[in-house]
Length: 209
Image 1 (cartoon, one colour):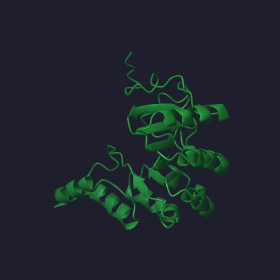
Image 2 (cartoon, rainbow, N blue to C red):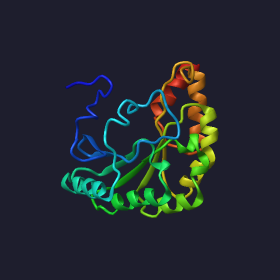
Image 3 (cartoon, helix red, strand yellow):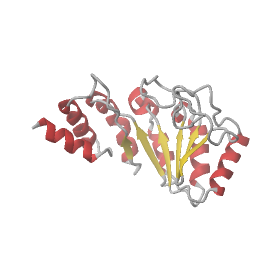
Image 4 (spheres, one colour):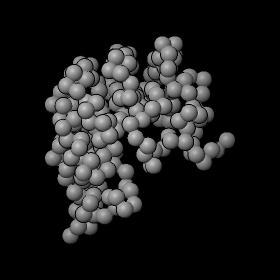
């Protein structure tokens, strides 16, 4: 049944395996926690946190790993929640190492707002450990040039270790919804070597002229 608060079927899909959500053949979302560093009004999962089970136990992790093995097309694992970096380094690495060890998995994504909301969370030690498998990417929502400034230092720790950092910028009314603001943000992202949608930059550049 359609739920307007969970329009992508997040509450129904893979309901028998805690924390596992799959909408596309080649990737899977692992909900690792219900905790976040901040409460984002644009979050697509804010309505299901607390309503949908997350991965909590060793048994849950074993079941999630078995699910990925049985679905051979999966090559991309997104560790999110909530925010996976609200967990301890040990718990984060346990998850990363477990999924990265699967030969079929080529990318393990850390989905986090820590670079903006808690930049000190990205330590040199954590960056070094995340880089060890060679499969980790970091996805973060950076929505303004100011946020990009906050994220620059923690992003550098990751990028300098060979970990790609990608921004999924959200278009927000009154925040970044003008060509000038968006172009300023995208230029900051470019300066910090973060990946982003080049089409957005082209549109902002055209509208600025």
